[in-house]
Amino acid sequence: MARVYNFSAGPAVLPEEVLREAAEEMLDYRGTGMSVMEMSHRSKPYETIIHEAEADLRELMNIPDNYKVLFLQGGASQQFAMIPMNLMKNKVADYIVTGQWAKKAFQEAKIYGTANKIASSEDKTFSYIPDCSDLPVSEDADYVYICENNTIYGTKFKTLPNTKGKPLVADVSSCFLSEPVDVSKYGLIYGGVQKNVGPAGVVIVIIREDLITEDTLPGTPTMLKYKIHADNESLYNTPPAYGIYICGKVFKWLKKLGGLEAMKELNEKKAAVLYDYLDESKLFKGTVVKEDRSLMNVPFVTGDEELDAKFVKEAKAAGFENLKGHRSVGGMRASIYNAMPIEGVQKLVEFMKDFEARNFK
Image 1 (cartoon, rainbow, N blue to C red):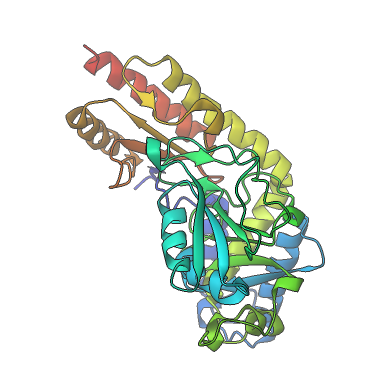
Image 2 (image 1 turned 135 degrees about the horizontal axis):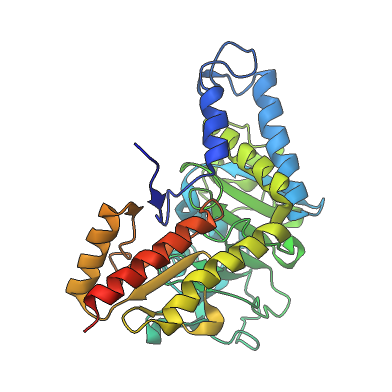
C-alpha cells in the first residue's frame, strides 16, 4: 500500500526518512541488540540519545544557556495546570484567548488563582488575532499566556503581545520548529510534539531558569514540579523514551535541511500554494483574516455542509486523509506541517480544482 497524504492536525505526518531510519533500528539499535523501546532509560546508549536530542534542539532554536529544556509527559493539556501550579506566585495570571486550547488553559488556571481574560477573538469565532500592543496587563500578574498558533482555527500570532514586562508563556504545539524563534522573548515556551516533531506522548518545555523554583502552589504533586525534572535532566522517572528518540531524529532531519530558516522558507512556499488557490477559488473559501493566517493549519469551507462532506469523502478516496475540520467548527482543514512535502499540497490543490469544476454551479 502506498503512503497517503496525511493532513491530520495531530498525531500528524512524520518525515519518511525518519520513519525508515527508525524501522532499520527497530530490532537492533546500533549494535545494542535491542530496540530503543526495550532499553533502560538509565543506560549509556539512552543517555546519549536524550542528551543529543537536547543539544540538537538547543542548536536549532538557539536556546540561551539560562533556559532549561524538559522532555515531559501528559501532553500540552497537562501544562494547562502545571504552569499555574509552578508560576502563579501572586495567584494572578493574564490570558489571551484566541482559540479552544487557550480557552481550556484559561479555565484550568482559574482553579489555582485569578485568571484574567485580557483579550479574546471569540466574538468572530476565533478567526483573527486581537491587537495585543497595549493590553490591560494586571500589575500583579505572574505571567501573560498565549496559544501562538491555533490548530483548530488556523490563526497565528505574527507579533508577540506586549506583556509590559511580565513573562510570556506560549503554547507553540502546532508551530513548533516551523520557523526561527527568539526564545529570550518568552519566560516559558512549550509544545506537545505530535504535530510537528514526533509521536504523541511527549511535551517539550523550554523554561527560563529564574522561573524554576521550589516555591510551587501548596499541593503541587512532585511529578508536576518543573524543578524536579530540571534537576534530574528529564530523567526523574521513566520518560517517554521512544518518543524522545524519534524527536531527536526529527531534530537531525531539520538540521540537515538547513535549520529553521530553511524550514520557514519551505513552509511559506507550501502554504502559498494552498492560500493562493483559496483566494481565487469560487467554491472554496479560507476562514481566517489574511494577516493572521497560520503556515501550519489551513481551514476552509464551501459554505454548504453537504458539499463539505462530499469533498472530504472524495478526497479520502483519492488518497488525501484527515481533511475534515475539527468537530467544533466543521468544514475542512489541511494541516501542512514540516513533514508534509510540497507535492502533497500541490496535488491537493489539483484535486480541489477538479472538485470545483465538477461541483460549482
